[in-house]
Length: 449
Image (cartoon, rainbow, N blue to C red):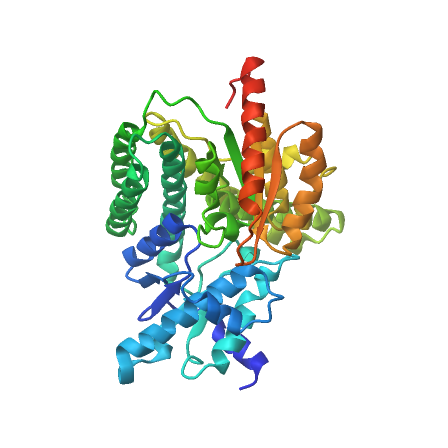
């Protein structure tokens, strides 16, 4: 079988039944909660240990790939090699499915699973491990992965798991800078994540979301006790950028903790934001195609695209309903920051003058998200991305001069796995500027967050 045939036969939507699905870790809580949602549906889902196989990932790549490609490749190679050692003669790579999604548009992410396929085929004993893939082009439809009667239920449960992961992250970022005892917030976060994974695994399949919410609400109530109320408010930093690097703490060298160590409180862009964006973008595309079909009097295409528009509109409405439902319950007990609505981010792009969602990628979200942070009184913006990432470089080109005119501190943080001796000094300078911005904002009576 040549490489092209292998990509067609061994990359795609395969049934998850009777297989072990290997998930790369991206956001720590997000990966484990989505795996819990899968296990709720009887799928043997495991989150692979991350970053230990980085040298393997670099060994089988050229260095021209963006950094997440090397990390995720290293994770799956490391995991399969450990499984081969553990099981010995009983190891069969065909029993595993490696999950690697993809996206269209001008981003190398769309090619990860193709490159990974070529490398797995070249490895001794790993060629039978197929790659299960979802694509943003069809809003990450799970058709083909699960039974038809389960796919909608799983999507809904998985989305709730993603939103809860965002809540847990925001709970950590809200409490850790103000914790009474060092390490208390992280220890509580890990304990809460374990409890939430169990709740999702037990209740997810039956969509008993109220039981899951109650577990979350109880955890958030207790999180308030971590905060020392006498600690004054710290400069608020908004983080945007490429979704993997900004979410994966090991690859960004624990940037949020570094910012906190120099006096900041950080809010990172969420995982749910991307899921919402995909539904929103596909809805907009279907709407544009429907208008074109109407002009061309193509009734068949018009009907098809109107159905697609409606499907994505219903999906987005459901996502917002669940997201708002969860945030309302949590915010009764702990002040965390709301997630961004995608239409508001698009409006920040000034009718396409600054950027356009039509280009695709996270750049539009990052630019819109940074401007939303500024609108709500944040004191600095950090753009996190893999070295040479094209969408984030475009984002930087737009945001740097724009935020300079607004006199809001801004910094780029790019990563490729090497240690950057000047990064800490740059972060220290940035946080000094953010503290100055906070003092000026408060002096002007602007406490809006």
